[in-house]
Amino acid sequence: MIRKNEQLLNFIMQLAEKPDVPGAIILRKLDAGTRLIHQGEANGNVYVIKSGVAKCLFTEESGKEYILAFLGEGETLGEIEAIRKLPTICSIEALTPLCVYKISNVQFLHFLETIPEFSRILLELMAIRLSDISLKGARQQLQPISELLPRLLSALEAQQIEFTKKDLSEYLGITLRSLNRALKEEK
Image (tube, rainbow, N blue to C red):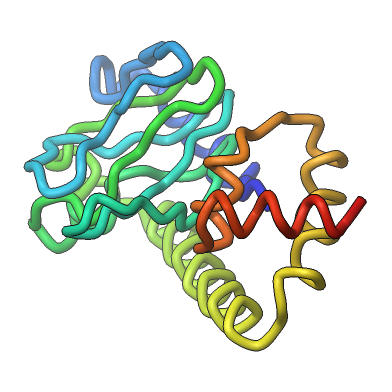
């Protein structure tokens, strides 16, 4: 449910300690509820989560929000936009207090071009993300909420993080009313 990437986090932590990259990787702290990245805007940085949980959400033209993923330690934010040199695709909001490593897009691209291990780790992360999002979409189309909800609630309980009903409905791609009905039937 909450994606994590310990391998990338360890790599960035080690890279941040190297004397030849002073100031290239900066630690930044954010409060819960803070939007780090705003959909549709230019973003000059890539972030790697050191601690905390963020949600990646897409807002439709109608204003309806859809949560694509919950991201935890070692997950990257803004890397696709840095690589493609485009405005941000989604917004990123801190669900809990968040501590992130901030890397400028220029520095991030330099790391990609000059550090093969970094490129490999990032490529693997993106492949896993693509696979997970595809499976999530397929499940949500093929399985009724009555089957998805118990698994989701169980995963949340295991993660020991509380999410609002709004977050859950946006993650499942359903209305708050539909979620409340499903929760009532679940009991």
